[in-house]
Picture 1: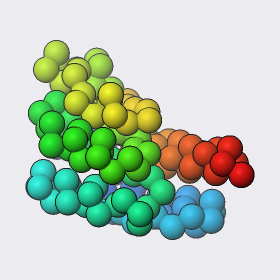
Picture 2: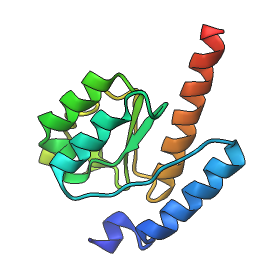
Picture 3: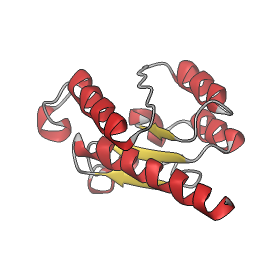
Length: 134
């Protein structure tokens, strides 16, 4: 991947930092990675009833995958879309997200920190929803 666009942190380093954040927040986090659209769809579908939120970087599937969009819509698990780069400052074809309309929010352009912001947003969303429901 282009280091100037996506940064130089490894996925393992990002995941390690997210695990530390989850531990500090008292939540459980499961990190997964796949380049397979079908596998991502399966994981999203399996999240119903197992996870309180999803944080996803759909990468190039952002701009192409109706299947990911439909999976997120069908499971009704709050989903935060994250991107390392600011997709809205990139090529025109990268500025459209099929997921944005079904995600509770989108965070992009902060490099690896986008993941941390996404996890924090998901935790906050779930906690506020629980407070509302009593």
